[in-house]
Length: 328
Image (cartoon, rainbow, N blue to C red; front, side):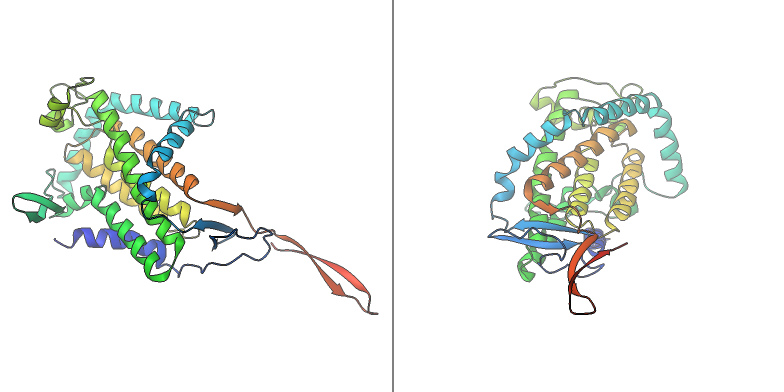
């Protein structure tokens, strides 16, 4: 199934831009704000979104700022309840990890979904694999969270933005690159700090935690240390959040995206890559990073177009009047 990466990327992309043609840059009627120089407004349902032209190296240059915003938001007053919920759900899932693991693998066998990753290299330079992709249903489900999918989405948006002179699409592509950098850095730091065994390498129930393994030890025995949190789920949630924040009028992004994340979550337990308790923090990181990046990259000039409008009119007798209209 060598076309796996292509149809996965196409499914997500079609739900974003091809559900209906992107709105042209314009100022929404009923909104008093006007775009500043070098800014374009894009209509998104009842919202209008403002974008400047993305800089070529902007995705890399904004990385530190995005990470700072992510950390600040995560430990803000508004973020603390979410941290508490992530912590509580993680602790509960740790208690049931073994049961969830065995039941998931049993269901996988019943549905004839392989419990081993059969992702294969399709492009090599010498003996070095450059491009890997899925070879069966199970590996296709696992591949949904791979960085190549996000890079494919990035290429789609960047190409579309360049061909159509669409700054919103180009900005979305830049943000996906920023998201890959920030989520990758964040999850790697936590993985290398917690050192949790994956189910396939577990030497004790629920896996042993070996905090702060050496760099060489981690690189040489990754399955002994890199379970917590799930980088695949973090990357997938980040991509869904970035796309839905930039295209709020595309209502299919979230349901399709969450359905695919569900399939990914199932398979990562089925093939012994992750415990279910690795998921809450991964999802939280992806969502928070996506929100931080979109907040830093563009500004909304107005949340909604005004439903209450006044306009002048000529009443019988030639006098000037004022009409009031309310849109339900």
